[in-house]
Length: 183
Length: 168
Image (tube, rainbow over all chains, first blue to last red; front, side, top):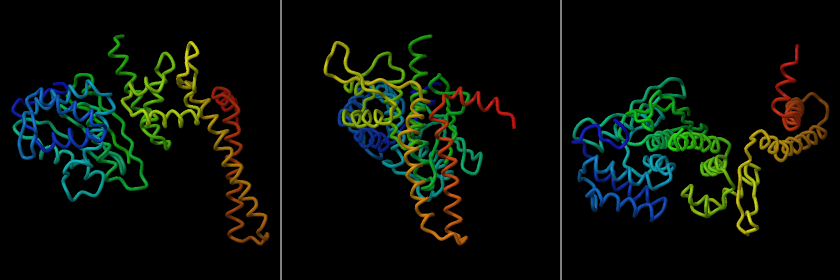
């Protein structure tokens, strides 16, 4: 498996997630980026995505890939980083480990219909832990997401630092990336 | 090596520079723009940096101003005498650090040391807690000043050589 290829053709993504990334997160960069994303979605047959509706993840991934190819690579990172701020996020989490564990919860809430992959957090030290992202989304997007979530729950006196430490990376055609998070 | 592999390697280093920039109180965009210029074969203009980073022109203008002030990048006049300003990265990070030491750290240390010494001079030599704390701070700042002076005067290899030849 590689980035942008769904693990299972039956997987669907919630319209709210599509809307949040395209309308809100993309719109924070520029109207041109948002319009390009809407056009890429339309090319995949997704027009006017609606919350509560479900869309094929593969179509969404194709659109995502088109968007990524046309934008600078760091935009993917920023999109991921913004996600916890603009998307509906599971409540009741107060610490960085809890927040990082909640990524998988949010992912399961927004995807359905087969093998979707996972986000696994393992604490390795008092203020450090590993997140293994095994999803068809691109590496920089997930890295930004992990950083954004960690920053949201980190104590005000800490600095969140992310290092990609796994032996595999989706940029090299693998199906998972591991990030060590320090906070 | 393919262009794809070289681009991927550049991107990973630039991502690391983004994070480093944030650690030192700069923006991630500052790390990216420095990184783009670090790998560029020739100086880049602001429109070229806008094109290569996707940032707004105002962001690129602000960041290039900040990076120029720190000494991480330099302004270069255009080839052929054109009016458009171009920027290139200072590739020797040690020189940049030395410049930061000289311009900012030494100045801060000297100013703080003078303030602390003035405060100490105004206190009677009565062994008070304040006097003891201020004395300790003075000694720390004097040590720091000496270390920063050495770091900004010698190259990394000269310092390494001096440390390696030291036998306690």
